[in-house]
Length: 454
Ligand code: 4AD
Ligand code: MG
Image (cartoon, rainbow, N blue to C red; front, side, top):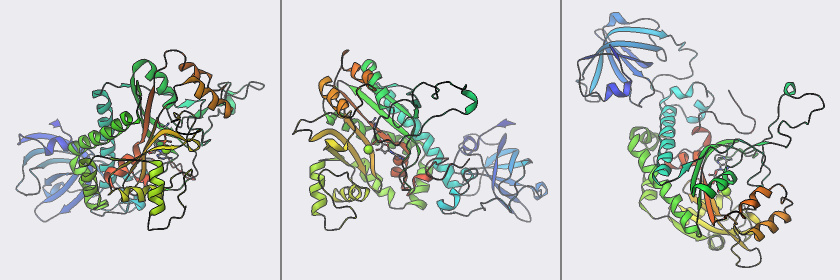
């Protein structure tokens, strides 16, 4: 018998074939005349119905067990499915201790409950749908950039720079065994960290390939227990040369969001629907609005004015020169009709050294852009980069970073082109399209303060 994934079997055009399916039992229903099983192998949300003679029943054939079923794929009379597998042979490959197994058949547990079992929660419908969406979204993002002429770059995980200058770094150290006594205490001779962003390396590459992107893990030692922060998260970053206006970057961000999302919706509609139906019923309409409408652009200065006029009171009073808080970001999105909002031209002092001075006053604003989305707040951050050597030099000197970033200054001397780019938090993107409240539920193994399970 030919081995088939559940997804293939469910979509089979030709029936009355002898096939073999392997997977995990999602339900067992034993009647006098017939035994019903549902088998799931992670290839689709839908499980394959197996009908068997009750004599094939076995005490190990329980919810959660790993099985191999061989039989004939036939047209189903049931209106919920096209086909079913008439079992000739059922083999329990690995039994499951159902009393100890934290999940029960046909029970939808809250996401917080499943989170306690990072090693088992991928066996639930919700998490397996999530992880399929995550996989399709990864492919969709790669496809978007590939189709638009970007070169994919692997930027390093271990680095000696603190791109964002926020000091939220994880230090990389060796075990004592590697170090000889008297040796320099640094494996690399310099302090090394897990990367907070691949941007600076992408800027190097944009200086040769014009359009580049990276999509990898990034790390921030932020002491935040919020529903949108992780210590390890994935970031999609793009960098474009010969870009002189924030508008060009904004366009790429909007196109990426809309194109990748449309691809995901077409690739795994059932998985997305599970979230829109059971996890966050308001999200379907919201997402349709996001895809249909042109995103809005306002300046930081306008944003502060809007916040000051708001009828509600905030925990943090909005003030020109202060960072926008999550509560402010959510209000701005609501104010704009639940459509994603680009906020541009932030105060100079709020942003990292690499952002381009707008010269609208003495170090007043930089060409920065954040994309704020419904329910989440900040999804993307980007900017034009300071490509003028004297501006960059004096800013780095003031920060005491001129020596460390000599190579970065170098780039401005050998065929420097105006350039810019952005980073999109991949987990926040998934939260946004699916309506998942807590970021810990959109990554298989979340890392956050006081928690590094498995
Ligand atoms: O705004 P950020 O800090 O921007 C950068 O790192 C730039 N160097 C990117 C670039 O221009 N190439 O981070 C970008 C995005 C944020 O908008 C947010 O979505 C996400 O990364 N992000 C986090 N996601 C989860 N957990 C955290 N702790 C995050 N910190 C940032
Ligand atoms: Mg940011």
